[in-house]
Every structure is written in structure tokens, then in C-alpha cells.
Length: 148
Image (tube, rainbow, N blue to C red; front, side, top):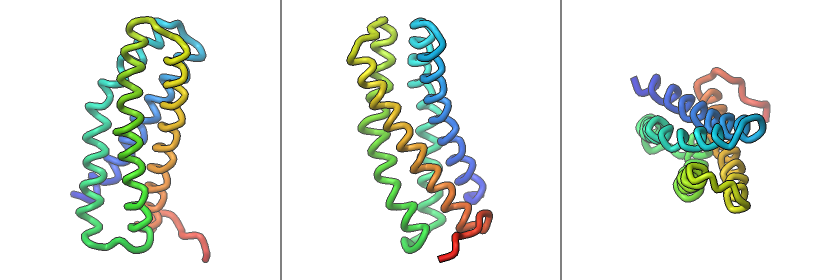
């Protein structure tokens, strides 16, 4: 069961973060401030899906890895503190701040500066999670390893 939960939870986390980013970019580029406020107000509610998905992916990873930390498993584990730190220290506070500012219709320089920070941090987490997914697929034999 763990071997099923882990990839599903990881894919759900990547898809959720991707949805956050897509809704932000599309609403900013093509919609009104009211739509931006609606998108920004919805993102924190998405944490109810994202945080358990990330916890499930991390918990099942620890369980499957046992005490092994060499090779691709070690590489995946080295990325996890950056993913978690980025989420806890940058992404969650940014999303809450932006939701508050958008709800108050305060689309000022601070709003956009934090939004840029959030977009960069989100892209970083998607990249790191995608690298972990790629390495997981390699470990399961679903992707061929590059010749060394």
C-alpha cells in the first residue's frame, strides 16, 4: 500500500502546487483584480490538500527507505529540507499575505514583490519535487538511468 500512496501523494502535491501557480499567472495576466483576489483567497484552502499530500509523500518515503541514504535515495532525502523549508518559510506565509492583501484590494508594490518571491519559490519547489519524482521513477525502473 505504501508503494501506491507515495507516488500518488507526490503527484498530487506537484499538481496542487502547479494549480496554485497556474491560477496565479492566468488570473494576473488575463483577469480582473476580483478574479485575482478570488484565486489568492482560494490558495490557502488548497493547503488542506497540499500539506497532507506532502506529509504522506515524505512519511512513506521514510518508511520505504528504512535506513538507506545512499544513491538516489540519499539525493532525494537531501532535497527534502529545501522543499519543506521553502514551503514553511516562504510559500505558506506568502500565500497568506497575498490572500489578505488581495481581499483588501491592495494591489501595490509590496503585493507584487511578494508575488514574484512566491512564484520563484513555487518554481523551485516544483523543480525539486519533479527531480524527486524522476529519481523515484529511475529507482523503480520506469525510467532508464543515464549511462555513467
